[in-house]
Image (cartoon, rainbow, N blue to C red; front, side, top):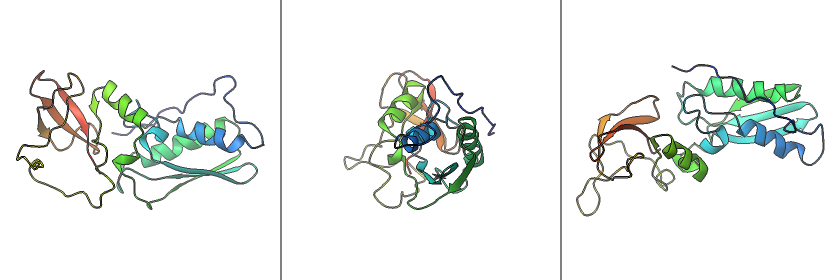
Length: 192
């Protein structure tokens, strides 16, 4: 279930300048600091869904977001949270658009985002798996060249032996796995 979350509050000194060369980076930083509604431990910038922030004319800001997948139920909440954050910072008109090209990939998640996911018990996607063309859908785990099942590391104890419990977990972007060493269940952010 997706619930609206309050946008980050302006801290003293974080309001974007009224004009000048530092305004656009400040607006991008503010929009990017909005937490993901489904995985609030990471921001939209860290998740890689914030594509662009522009100010085509004074007082009007346009933001482009790319969803993690076409049917992402959190996209509307993301747009509302970005609009709320920018409006609270004094932007008069905010337009948030959804863009699908280039498509989002788990490779777009920043290193900081991956670190935060792991720190909060979500196994991050393996790097380098999202830009090699379409991701094959498999009914069984991928096999490495040596015949062993490709492993997902446990975010709790870092053991490589885990088992899939459910293809879907707390969000459509995650699967539910369990570590064979520490027996703890955890979410794994699926590679796309």
